[in-house]
Amino acid sequence: MNRKTLFEFLFLGVIWGSSYSLIAVSLERFSPLQVAQVRLIGGAVVLLAVLLSNRARRGRVTWSASFVAHLFGAGLVSTALPYLLISWGETKAPSAVAGMLGATTPIFAAILAPIVLKEALGTNRKVGISVGLVGVILIFHPWNTQGMGSIIAEGAIVLAAALYAVSFIYLKRFLIPTGASSLTIAAGQITASALMLLALDPTGPGVVLHGGARVDLSVLTLGIIQTGFAALLSTRLVRQVSATVSSAVTYLIAVVSVAEGFFFQHQKLELVFFAGALVVMVGLFITSSGDSMSFFESRAKGLKPSS
Image (cartoon, rainbow, N blue to C red; front, side, top):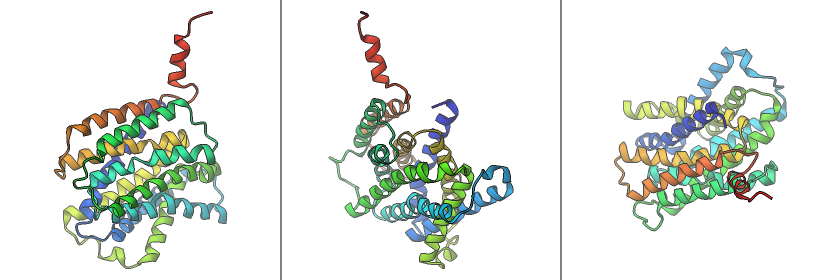
């Protein structure tokens, strides 16, 4: 992972991590479906505007029925269902808890990627994912259940995390190989997602943007930055690295979401959070330290006595 990709990786984690607190603010006045709808409409408008204004960035793509169907498939698992599940889950679970539960995505990606994409799950990724998960558990500290929210709501957020893992793999297998640009894929799947949720309630977005400046700004930011810009960035990331490594960005999301809960929503955090955050960063380093040879295998070879 080069410096530019690492920067995009970290920036995407910050963007997505901050979305949980913005969702919490948006839910003060709007329903979960309305929040998800406005997120997707805002993201679609931004991405389509950029796409239509720059023909060179569309890539080589044939708008076949199969390609459009895959855009809807990707949209369903990457944004439409996860956004709806997370928004509903946050009506009962704190944003910090939601962010921590979202960090389970790499676990599902690690299970699915070797099966579906035939990606090698080397020692680096196995150890990195395991270490990162330990950090998430420390942050989550399930032995203290105060303020955890309902089990069903938390289960919905975990299901969203699993769908994110499926989306990374879906993109890698069905859309990246088409030759379409990251911008085309991002705009297409976000637009498809918006259409699917609008079909559930076409009048839903009509009552939005009347919740006051704070709430309106939160939901608009969710659409423009956390959805539109993040969709483009995540598609670029999947193109450059493996599905397992790209999905590991959710570890960083856990740290950002809890930090925002502490500083902006005044959620009480214990010292175990800071220990968990450090372990998460170690897991991130190991996971992204290279695919050609395991960090641990190379160290072991270096320790072998010469013959």
